[in-house]
Length: 253
Ligand SMILES: C[S@@+](CC[C@H](N)C(=O)[O-])C[C@H]1O[C@@H](n2cnc3c(N)ncnc32)[C@H](O)[C@@H]1O
Image 1 (cartoon, rainbow, N blue to C red):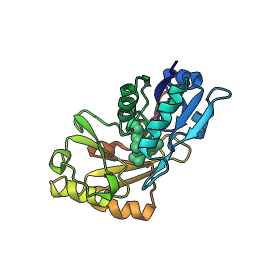
Image 2: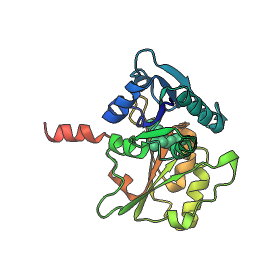
Image 3: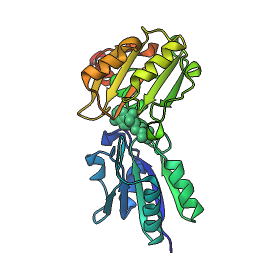
Image 4: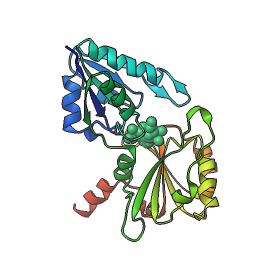
């Protein structure tokens, strides 16, 4: 009898941000296949005796190619195991979860999902900067700043350069200069505020406030490293240097 695969979003790093469903699935698994972005505290919550298989990917350094990850999941499920495929953030947002699920279902393996808090939401609530706000942003767009095999970024700059939308750039550190220029070329003002958040929701979280026309230089100077995301738009003007829970705590005693 074949086993099954749980495609689990582990959230942005803080273990408290995992869902109960994600935790239950992780604890039901006898094999855990996990990414680099999954924190040690989360990994430590696996069931006693579960086998751990790291398949982490670092930028420009694919430790285990995606095809091989698919095969590992299939082999483990075919061997009758319950497999937790543990991914950072949400498995269906820049996580290739849907590719893995398609491969497994095409081979007759059952897949179940646990959504995770994506990095944008984690960074937003950690810093107190909303992604939408009445009068500042009526919508939000998530975009990847990364292209396969160092190809040129060919994003739809016109669509992205909307002053009434918050833009969240994932995987953008290496190409942030190109991204800023693309947006400014389509008339997003150079004064547009930007908040870069590294390792959001973890004890090592880093924040950098900048503006579009200084962004590349500021990121270089701060030596920001992945995982970092960029929140670009007028909502960043609400940044108060303190996490929103501290502000609420103070307001309500
Ligand atoms: C391959 S994508 C995975 C996204 C993930 N599936 C999610 O929903 O958050 C990796 C990128 O997500 C962002 N990211 C993930 N975790 C993060 C964190 N804790 N802080 C800041 N950015 C993070 C970074 O932009 C990183 O380069």
